[in-house]
Length: 305
Image (tube, rainbow, N blue to C red; front, side, top):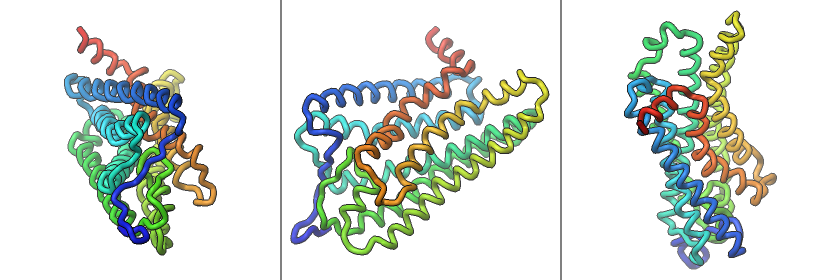
């Protein structure tokens, strides 16, 4: 990739701050979040695999979500920790490409998986007696596999297009990872077609799953309203409350970053929001799906005993 008369072989990640004290504080904070993320998601995966009571489509999807969050944290946090304590802020061109590909693929896969989980909750609430037939293990496996395939296929298209640009403006990325928008700012040449591709991928990977989730919850709400007893309504709603919280936090942060015009980007604010869906959200997911879940608590008690 030429840059003037030179070739860009690496990028420089500026991170969050140049203050040594703040860098140390951030290192400790991210290290704690990394340990909690790995421990929480690994524990949830082990519980789902080991306890027969959790061998249902709902927990199959939850396990896959934990696997994605575990993988996602490994894509981001080790490099964040490195640039917090090291004077070397560089990342190789190949390393940047790999981080971009896996982060986009995992994010897109999670978007599809959350939509599949919404459909699963709709079937569980609207057709409880036919749930095991309507949402079989084979269908759950198909939806999960389709999520991975769609996510990484779209990531491959976006990565190929992004890294085909000539990065002739600079090689300094004002962010803590190789993200889409900072890379586009470094690109020279015509990027109008790229904007069209970016909005198409935003529509297919984010807007479409959101529409499916909203449709599922409209049917869920209609079903809950037909339940006569208040206790029955609360019980039905509790089965999808964790997923609803997860969807709101995840999609809210992604839409804030990627659905605005480029002229309205604020790097400092966007870094904070990006941190939420790349680092904080994977740490919170095990808590969201286990705090009020009796099955998971029972499996955890059984594991420790």
